[in-house]
Image (cartoon, rainbow, N blue to C red; front, side, top):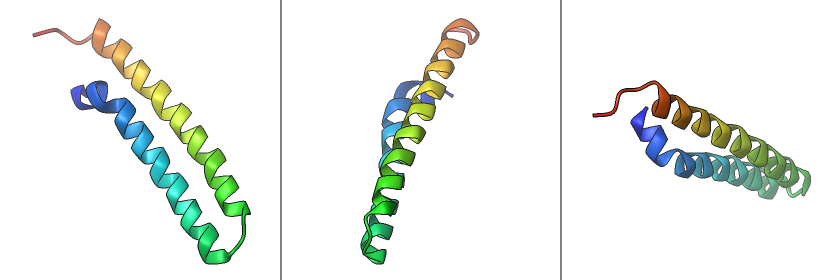
Length: 68
């Protein structure tokens, strides 16, 4: 849990970039534009969800976990 509290934003950006790059690769394979547009929207949604999850984890860690 401490790992996600410290590096959660980096992990969120990396996972959303991975999603976008996957759809971008599919767009090149198919030769069409729509998969990259879908990937951009999906990456933005994933980023928003993961960043909010990291913020909730920070609140939980700050209020409930003991500090050493």
